[in-house]
Length: 361
Image 1 (cartoon, rainbow, N blue to C red):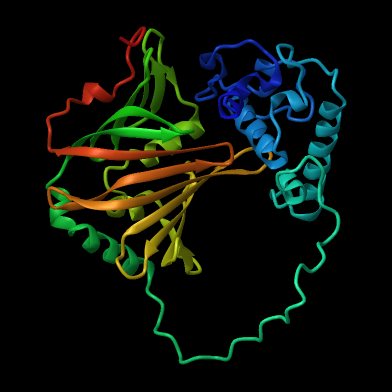
Image 2 (image 1 turned 60 degrees about the vertical axis):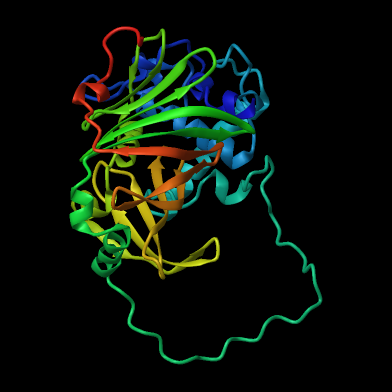
């Protein structure tokens, strides 16, 4: 229930609007105060970023909407916590403006770390064991691989460029695992970047699509809505049929990061930035070359919201190794998709990925 309620953050700013009325793409983009009621500290914020900003605050403090807001009357100023939150927003913005040239270096999470009250003193030692001695220098390590070498190893690990080009569509079936429940799911994908997923709930089906240009979502019996710009950018990245072949095109600014260990596996790290796309961090297994994790970061007025996708259970699917299991984690939600069946090069018309006109059947 906490996850479900947290996803309703469009109501955080206290106004009854449809998701369509919050769209900010194009020349008629609206600010938060033009769409929502009683906006003070976040005036000028694009309306479609307010929800993600509220999610950031919730995750940083480990609370839900009603910690600050009156249920059903979100614009009300009845709760002292709401005034405090406004003061804290002003404080962090001032710190960043005066000390960090406007960059979001200090956020709610800097002090709160998932608690309503910030930590203001260091912890005491929990052991009287001596600190570990500094490691003695070992033998010189081999020269670190370049970004091109890391990506080339990844392409080779999944089967090679020729094998990748032979597959242009995939239709996958499996299940979503979340909160102890299982929900059937279908995924239709087509090169270079079209995708639609259909999760089948007992009463209806939910759709999330990207048509190669923009994203949309909805459920049976209701009209689909356009994704916001940030949602669409993330959906477009998820829709990449094979990211390894296009990552240099999508992210001209790629650089090697510090190696990290993911679930016991040493990984090479590649960081990517590009205008209009979420910043990403890719983790490749040093031994196998396979992609084990992708982290992407969505900017909000309060700080960056991370999304982490862990890939596992790589299997051969018509000459190309793909993950049959991936787990998506956010500060407020987590779910796993386990694929059971994959069919490659199945005819899929482009209309499959287009936003439906009218109510979804």
